[in-house]
Image (cartoon, rainbow, N blue to C red; front, side, top):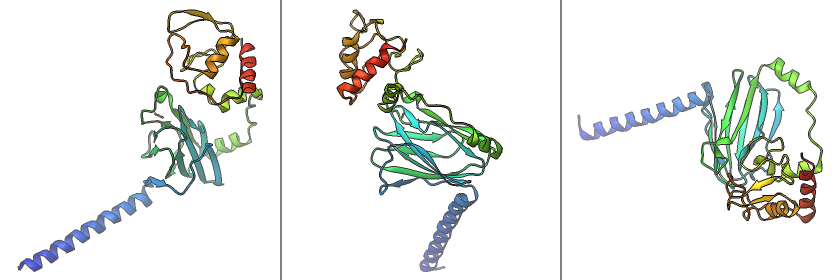
Length: 256
Ligand code: CUA
């Protein structure tokens, strides 16, 4: 065998090998629904998480990862659905894995990442952030529930739970205050709002104060000045008008 013949054979074999790999990849995508994550730079990042129904078995799911939660937090879809998942973030880099699937996307400010997943059996999938993104990183989780058709239909026709309509509550929610402060007394990244008004509060510097109007207003407008003992100085300065701060103070005063 001459060298030229040998080279020809090697070229043929490499081509065959490359084609086999491509074929296997195509098979994996089509047969086993392995989604290839894609970075889309021509779509404007979403500000709002939502589930959009295209047909009874095709959904579009916009996830927004933000410090420190995923929106929407609880999604229900029927088994057999194909879901186009889009992920974006308005703040820092987060990651998204869907435990129990191959889905693994990065949430990078300024771009939208995409992958398609088909859900063939009913179960509750947990979404987790896998990129360290600050104090609340380890609480970044959400549920994606794949349910059988009967359960799904029953849920669709069930009356929606009533949302709190208090404008102050809605403002706290819109400004993401409730990501870190609870209103039911349970533990959070920041002190709970429940009973905060007039509460004797120990500060990091060792002094004790009563959380009056002046202190609360100051703590909302300049979060870093007086830190409550046991908590970290992590609250970003919120964008609030004076009227909005008044509204929040009034709400806190009544939250016994
Ligand atoms: Cu978001 Cu870690």
